[in-house]
Length: 151
Image 1 (cartoon, rainbow, N blue to C red):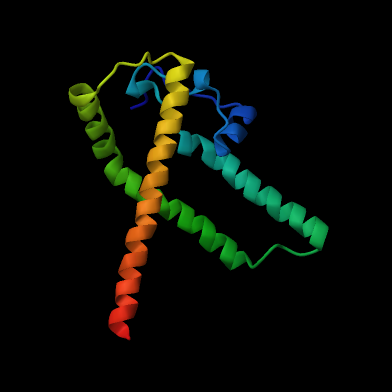
Image 2 (cartoon, helix red, strand yellow; image 1 turned 30 degrees about the vertical axis):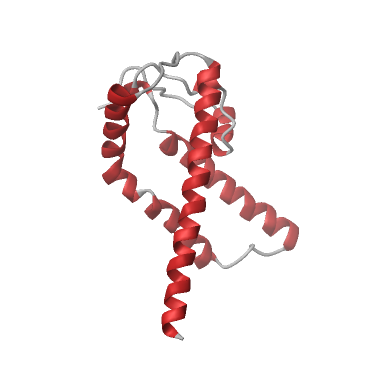
């Protein structure tokens, strides 16, 4: 069921800016979870359009496509398949976030303040940076252990 407050239309400008995380705070700030649009769903047509534009420009400039068609289709399929876990875990993620926010938050930030948007943008990016860095560290230790045991 579609929520009444969610955005129905996305302009071309918004769609392109979604692709590069260049949305304005006022365009991505919502009072309730139900109002938040499905950005991936809305950005997908713009992503596909950019891929096709790249193919056309490459074909015009080089006289041939920029790779094999099967590679392109495989990459696009991998992108689609990468979204499948969100179907299963998105509700768990949102429910966990709301529970933690309601029971363990340290401060209340005004939902409609641009400063809240900027601080959370930096906070999420900082958190992802450390998650990504630790993932590489864990993977490296795991693979080094495998190599050492194989030798």
